[in-house]
Length: 82
Image 1 (cartoon, helix red, strand yellow):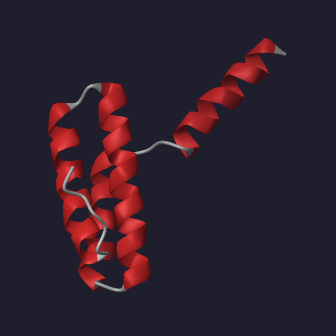
Image 2 (cartoon, one colour):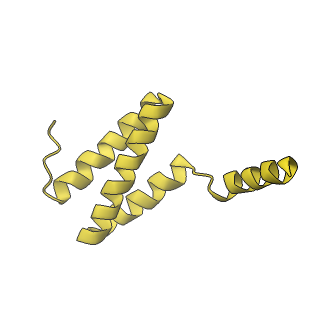
């Protein structure tokens, strides 16, 4: 029973594997369309990446995510100054 549980957890990790580079690619594509709903989706992706960078203490990821938050926030007229 324990083996089955461990195999299931291992499989779920592969299914839900999250790659920051592909997330940035996707967010950049959404941002490039300049459609409001796509820009908002990109804004949320950048925020998620920023939180991930804080948890992982990854400075380059944090900086790149902040750049995306600022760019998309300006397009959405969200105050990202702070």
